Length: 93
Image (tube, rainbow, N blue to C red; front, side, top):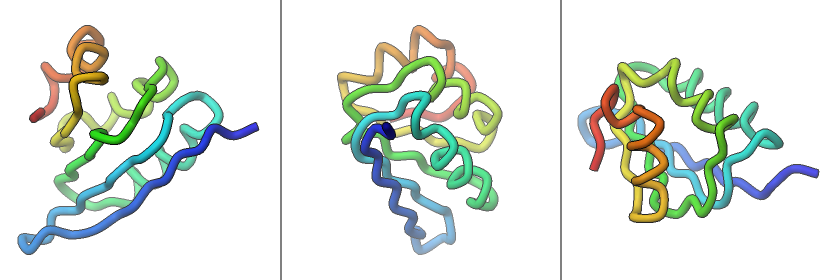
């Protein structure tokens, strides 16, 4: 069974892709997240504000894109992203 995750892509006026995730990110849905990240060209803003859960499988999908990611995360995920070291490699808010 796949955990519910909604991914919505949009663009900022400067052309930067914004990918907004809502739900939970775990091993059951990382393929769709990976595909969305792969499909987005250049710099990418990943808004995780409405993500309630992120496991190690989800983190492993983010690391290959760290050099081009700008992360937006709420207080729930901020410690996970920090402890994983991902915030050391990305721009975060």
